[in-house]
Amino acid sequence: MANPFVRAQYLLAAHNHRQLPPDGGFEVAFAGRSNAGKSSALNALCQQNALARVSKTPGRTQQLVYFALPPYEDRFLVDLPGYGFAKVPKDLQAHWQAFLDGWFGSRDALKGLVVVMDIRHPLKDYDRQMIGYAVNRGLPAHALLTKADKLGRGAAGNVLQAVRKELSGAYGDTVSVQTFSGESKLGVDEAREVVARWLEL
Image (cartoon, rainbow, N blue to C red; front, side, top):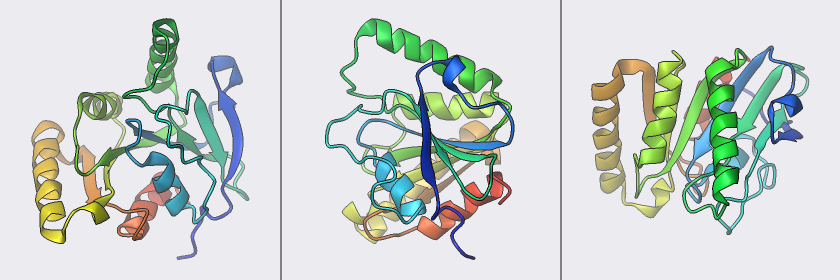
């Protein structure tokens, strides 16, 4: 199928609830620890080089960034702030936590969550927390094991099996898992199909 995301474009960045677009339509969120490869994954899905800024400085995304998908007026990709070693003051972290908790807990438009993890360091506390958020809301989650080109095929397959086993043990079949590489384009079509299905494109 033609890529429905090639026309994706930056819409807005929200620091608080007032700045969010109306809560209707369909949104898919992307979460990942700092430097997990989230921006690269978004760029690969949309076949654009600079849609999501790829930053060497971890934790630059300090807002919910919305990308619109023309010609649809109510379909959005949402880039969540990267956590990990983001050097942010404690009060800002508290603001974020409250904002994200509220957004996650009450956003009707949210249809699914993609959790981006570096295949060499999967299932850190943050990843589990984000997957838990989705499952508690009854939303599907999809784990992208990025940078799979950094491991040999056998090693990548072993990590995939281990992560799949742990997540299915914890959550049944509500969380799917795949290997991915923005560099080599491994798994890009598979990931795109998941997101397109959630957005009912």
